[in-house]
Image 1 (cartoon, rainbow, N blue to C red):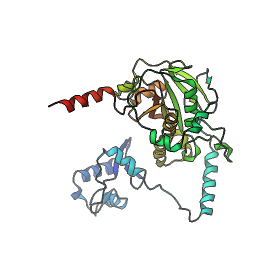
Image 2: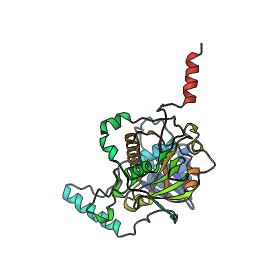
Image 3: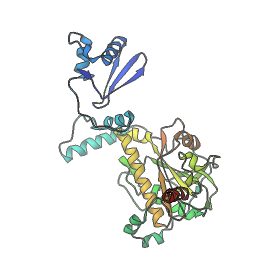
Length: 355
């Protein structure tokens, strides 16, 4: 017998909790069971079929026979736990036809709607709001989808030219706004964005980083998609943007960017299983791609990153200790379109020129 490789252990006084993240099962061990498990971890050959604790461990797959096949995982154990632990959603009964699925789904929705929905925002809203003008996208109608897809690239060289508040309005509306041009038969989920959203929950929120936008003071803003408005959270911090993005200082000239967060409480409300955590990142990716496509169609250079100084960003956005977490950053502006910053290009040229 050997210890199941898909276990992790949590300290939850007075118990030790053993979690089988592959089978989605948990077991509370008292001091006697925990001590025996420690002995078997130290030396699995001490397994004794006459010991009732050992037999229980084997019955619930804390101990398993033979070697199990595992992916040769190259990341750390946390990523492995996340991937395997969110596979194979536990399901009491799998619908056998579309009628059964519709009945079960309607019952699930009724259960969800019987409990209070999460609030519009996780933190108090600033009182003053700036309502943005209705986006003008006539020029975008002449830009083909194919041209936009081919033209999109990641730029790391931006200059100090400003973008306009009209451009920001169009970007926000088409990436995160609730589109007036769309409708939905279910009133509770009538707010529709250009991007798909798990369960129609619109779990993503946007926070503007404004450094150089004509018509909008520099600062950090919350976006309110229901009103297509923004509210100032605070002035720009002393830290450069690059410092907030793990030292990527080539981005410090960026005139405008968007921190995309996920409202985990919205996802928890409808989906209890941790599989929904995957959907938080999927939805964030959808929103970021919409932002990048619109910016590209408007003739702006774009940049994106998932490398955030999380604690600093949470503090700046007032999200510490809340179920809303920053996951991604996208930005746009003017520049020469270089994929690499000038400093890196200089180093590469010097390296190529060296004997």
